[in-house]
Amino acid sequence: MSTHSVSIQSARLSQIGVNRQVLKEGSSVLVRVIGERGGGKYEGSVAGVRVQLSASKPLHAGDSFVATVAVKNGTVVVIPKETPGISQISFNFTEVSQNQLYSLLESLGLPADNLSSSILQSFKQMGLKMDSGLANKIRNLALRFSGKEKTAAEILSLLSQKGIEADEQEIKDLLMLLSGNTEDRNETQSNQNTKEKLINKINSTEGSWYLLPFDLIQIGDSGEDEIENRLVLGNGCIRLLFNSFCALQLLNVDCNYNNQKYLFSLSYEGKKIKNTYFNVSSLASTYNSKVPENESLKLKKLFISYGVNAGNISWIEKNILEGNASGLETFVKFGGEV
Picture 1 (tube, helix red, strand yellow):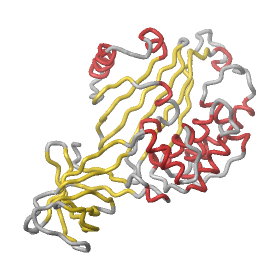
Picture 2: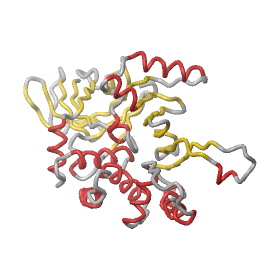
Picture 3: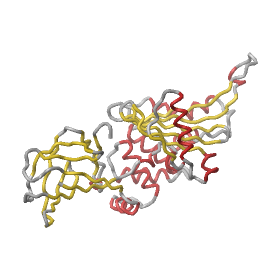
């Protein structure tokens, strides 16, 4: 927590949206007492999030005071300003369990399954308000793309965020392009332009995600037309996620090369890489999805050789990193103590 800030959200998401507020060290926040629980324990609200409080001084429902946000030993604390009997409020962050997440989905009118969870994660990743009607619409459309429902849901979410309309064929073409489908490398330039139509819409519209598909090309040296003599060695896509301040938040790379699938996701804090997540298909098959630590060390040394600090490097399962890597998103609930 080097930036000394934390993005907080209600575990219930207010049943209508992801209400987010960023607490930064030194900023002020209003604390309200909602009710008494007995034994010096109280239910309170901090920045709109309900927490459990305790205090040596009796408090009453309706009491409120201003506090300052601080970070101590990696824990977010809220220190009341000139309030006798109250020293500080410490927040405890607990990741919401799968069952709790499914309960939330049901309360939002969504089927409690992995696809609905993925849609919720995509919304959170992009800072979209949780609109249950929109989520259901995206889910119903994503189900039309058998075998690619999760990726389709991510694409549909980012289209919604950017306010872009697209028909089913355009989305199907985009999914084929992003999958690195090589079954028809001799397609006409007209067909290729059609597939890239939606990509151009996405990248020319301001918003969260920008998608940059690429091919790894080996050019022939015969002196003839380079296009006719080029050899496609691999393909993939670079995905860039920018926050509302136009700062790079996430850089994802997927690449198909030499019969291997390479996946990387780099999260940024400021201009520095905070976390690097990776998955390589050959390593997964070799180690039965339990890649030893020395593989992470090899990757770290490779980054260092290029003068790059990759932050914390971790192996992550393929299904989490695929696409926009929205599977990395988690939901938390809060507790607190004064």
